[in-house]
Length: 301
Image (cartoon, rainbow, N blue to C red):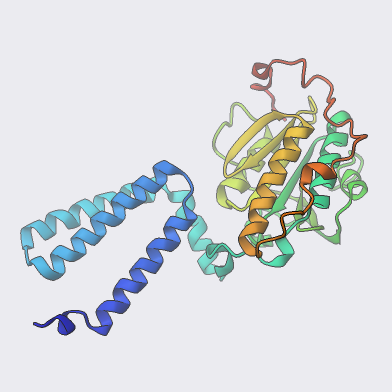
C-alpha cells in the first residue's frame, strides 16, 4: 500500500470532520476540569479507532471499547444537563448558539447596562423583589420556560422595568426577559434548579435553573426580604453584591459576548464605567454593607 492509497479522500474528510467537531467542543468548554475530562475521553475514542482500523488486535480492541463505553456512561451522567441542552439546541435548529455567533438582536450597549443597574438599585432600595433574565445569545424561546409570560416587545427603560415589578401588578412575581435593548416578555416562569434548595428561595433557584440550562444568559435577582442584589451566571450565584459590582460584572459579561460576534472596535471607545451616572446612589443599599455575608445564607426569597 503506497502513501497516496493510505491518505485517500475519504480518510482526509473523516479526519477533517473529526478535528472540526473536536475544535467546536473545545471552544465551547470553559471550565478547566471539564476540558481535561473531554481531552481524556477524545483520546480514548481516537485510540480505540486507531486500534480497530490499523492494529488488528481483537482482544485489545474489545477492552478499549469497554473502557470507552464505561466512560461514555459516566460522562452522560456527569454532563446530563449539558447534553440535554445540546439536544434541545439541535432539535430547535439553533445552530448559531452552538457555533457561538450571537445575532445582533442580543448585543446590548453600555446604556443597557446603566439602565439595568439603575433599575436593580432602585428596586433594592425599595426592597421590591425582581428577576431579570438577560439573553446574551442563547436565543431563549417560549418553549424554554415553564410559562412564557406576557409578550411586551418594548424598548428597555428603567421606568418600564420598575412598573413591571410593582407589587400591585399581575406580572411582578415572574421574570422579565431582556434581549439587547428590548424587553421581550414579563411574568415568565423559569425552571428551578435542584442545587441549594435548602439555602435559596424561589427567585434564586429560578435564576440558577435557567443559567444552568443556557450558558449564554444571566439573571439579576433582587431579594424582596432584604433588598440584596445577586447575579446568576452559568449555574453559579454571586451574592450579595453592590451596584458597582453589578455594573462591573455586567460590563464584563455583556462586553465579552458582544466581542464574540462583532469586529474589533476602535481603542478610543468610552468604557462602561465612564457611563455611570455620577449621582447614582444605588450602591448605598440599606443593610448590605453592614450585614455579614454569612447572614445571607438563610434567605428564602
